[in-house]
Length: 450
Image (tube, rainbow, N blue to C red; front, side, top):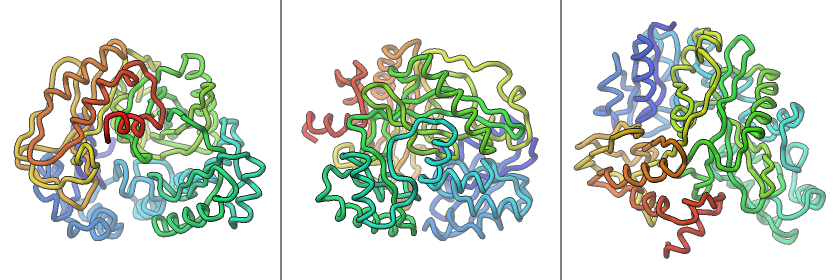
């Protein structure tokens, strides 16, 4: 096991990694910007190093500064958390060159799966179901028209290096394709420095289903089942749950087996999430892979009793899967996670500022992952996530009731939060009946005057 790990992140995920390290007897080093000087990760880490001013490019995304901190602290490994540098293959490569273990897949695998069109081709070759679409990058709007005629409208053009809905356009007819293609290309180039696009068949009213996997460095890959992530706004997830009401045990086992085989074939290691769209015939189609721990990983932890972050660290230290999991994966009950953001619940505008009162809920089956506290400050420079509220019940009905109760008892004052929005979602008849897809929030907001 490692003696000391640097956490290349901030906020609740940095604190989450610190908790895992403490339980494993591993010392931790937190890095922080000047804006996070009084954060809980800084307080609870064994060491803390300031790496720059508040701006991301000058601190958390400054690879030389992060590596310098790791070398000064003499750490053996770096945990990247999610976001920031977590899927940056160059960062993983620099860690490797510097003799520091990157807790994640190897740089070449991160690079392969990070370029969505290459990941799509790799999954297709391995037998993972994918949507009809282009064979690789589309060079021009004229070529896009040719592919769309083959695939059939509606189609969606996507940025190969993209994420978060940027560089993405739904196209419903040939006349609007050239203009939307160029717009997506320009947006992708501006957001990612790469304007490459590819095309897929657009699925109407899909569900967003993702599978969690763990892979050790001895060729063993295990699937921990799926999460339902259909409650999202502009491709940003708001609420997640596990298991999905639409995935049968047979489908779970079938997809899990295919994923384990395909990821072993490309030499994947550590934690990863494979994302699918489910059509109205309950068929799953691969869309992308995230080569890191996910924001919503706690719902899988709640139903499997597997600590995914500790598993990541043990795998990176060389542990075999049998020593990591200590037995077969067993799913129990139902879990739901609500992302509590510092945002206006109706306008979705950020709400930075000082938290004047903070009281997280508790009780049976309730978990809160957060780095927030009374008198703590939500800086305007970073993601607006304040906390993740997670519950587990014996079934979905109990989980929904428990989440509704927990939301009612969650107090955050001084900034706007999305707690009122989540309370309305949990009370919605369609949500309670499980009638959801990726268009749920748009319909919900329209129905509720949003």
